[in-house]
Length: 144
Image 1 (cartoon, rainbow, N blue to C red):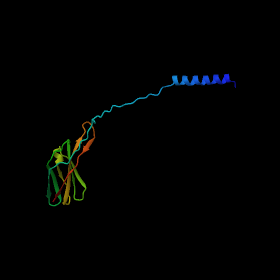
Image 2 (cartoon, one colour):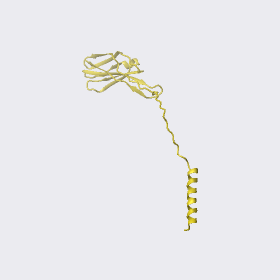
Image 3 (cartoon, rainbow, N blue to C red):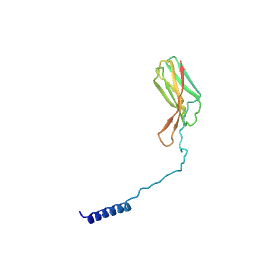
Image 4 (cartoon, one colour):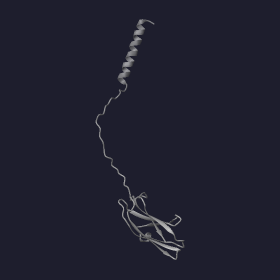
């Protein structure tokens, strides 16, 4: 290979590299030094158990019982209240909506009377959906 061919070849290679660097995309270099902190735009509510409740149990002949919710303490963030009544074996006997008069009283069929338990809890039912947040229960027992 002659020196003239080597020189032309080197010149073409340098020209191609320079054109490639000029025509190709350039790397962006940026540095950000400012920082911002934003407060979250959401929060979560906690639904506590009612502080008090008055629930009575009336027994008839040791075979029939009537459980009535007389009152319960309201809970912050709750828009619905419910009672669950469990028999002496721990089986769920009744679930009542405390916003309805019919949900405040449970009358059993023929049952062997003993120590029953109940739970009253508040819920937040999200309007327009089937979703709800469940509160902590207020627990109590009743004995005939």
